[in-house]
Image 1 (cartoon, one colour):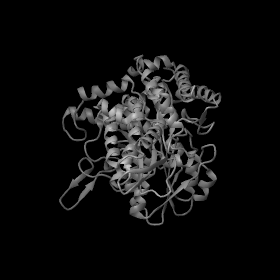
Image 2 (cartoon, rainbow over the protein chains, first blue to last red):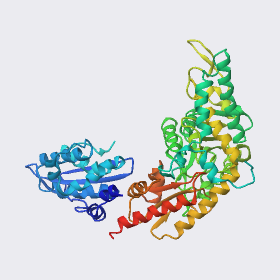
Image 3 (cartoon, each protein chain N blue to C red):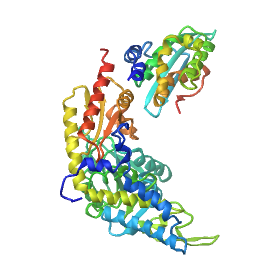
Image 4 (cartoon, each protein chain N blue to C red):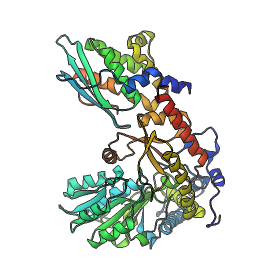
Length: 150
Length: 408
């Protein structure tokens, strides 16, 4: 039950129910779809990246579980105004927290609010829900194709 | 066990080691696969321990023993579905392979413009093989609509049938909605226009009687693992006259009578369709599962499961935070539902922490999810060993879901 409450803590439920930066951007310079075929979660991330490679604005749409929505919501809050190199570094930090699970204290600090998603690592079948939007962001910045969790 | 007495569920539970362990989760994912009784597990291990030799090959006693058990298993399967002859039973890996076999082999008799009818409640296994066939042969796929209550729209079905319809391929029971389709009537109508009828009985044998002669279906398939048998084995039933006219599916050893570099002669059905070393131990394991079901009595099972289903439906009725899909009647204990405002996967994780295993997702029926306008559903599905206490526990877990997500 403690692990469960760690997973579904209030901030995650809140971001899951009322995701920040939810919606489409009108003139995105970059956009990217993400799809998790296992659970049907799908989202699309929209970015305006300026000439200096700084993310001026970011929004997302989609539907999915509380974990995937909260994660995308926190991601957008975190990367807005950051250089894409920094954003990519944060994606690596996030992967270190949930996928390779060898995250440093500094990385956890850099992740800020998104570090509350650490509890997801106790639920292997849900890790992909949390990482979906982060994959999509990385691919969007690199101009690659649709992100999937597979 | 007598056929006309209700089942003693507590005794049945003793047949399943999994259920004896109190630390195990409550298993309510039986539409996906069931737990296995000792009689099946022992049959498998005994076969490998004491009877293992390749079948239909060796001129030695051990191979004859193995072959006899393999062919007995075919007869048990034939008896179970009331087939005329065991020659109408082809062993396959499961329903998916069976439907691929029919699409690939019977499908060769179809031409561009011919039509295959499926329905809006099919599993991907009864959609994708026909799509592949349509790409090769130019056949058309027609899809029967659902009614609001989650049953097949038979008026729509009738309107789809025409002289171009060559095959109707329909789930006996929906793996999502639990609907028992009136395949008897549908088969009559299909035969009136000269179409053949395949029943995807993946969800049937553990829950309701299957009688291929009474139904007069042309093909029927089920997998063993959904009715207390092993994985990797199932059957395709086909009327013998049809199987005879069909080309082999896979080719190689076991299915030939003679081979030269230029050409080969094939065995008669069913062996024509069983290339390579078959899953003979699993086939024997499946036969023991079917005999186990016979011993319990399918009518007794239905009675017990109907009772538990009614209890569960009543629980759903009392909850306004849950949306249950599927019909009220003519159904089995498969409950696909949503918790209002909570994604199916969050429900599954919380229930898992609560010690209840259910499935969440699209249930290999993405087009149906689209029809229902839901990204995913939670599904609880009953087996013969489930109890009212376990259902109570499921609903306790759903209370926890509500608590966590209600910002209390």
